[in-house]
Image (cartoon, rainbow, N blue to C red; front, side, top):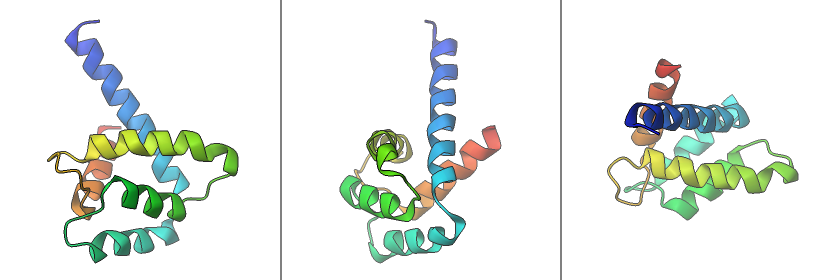
Length: 102
């Protein structure tokens, strides 16, 4: 697989994960999710992120394991500065960027 194909596959995977996550977070839960991010001065680490996002989602028990795996991948994609924390701004900008690309 050449670099262009690899990049295209990565973009498609990122868009798929982002869409799946955003479809599972009801609009009325976004403000609560934002509060979780804002309460931390440095952002959410992986475990805090997982707890916050999963609790904001509408998930059936059967979806939980797959969604957690997607959220872990999503966290690594969004943590663009690689500090192990996701800030609200990183989260929002990543989602907006994914929507614009689609």
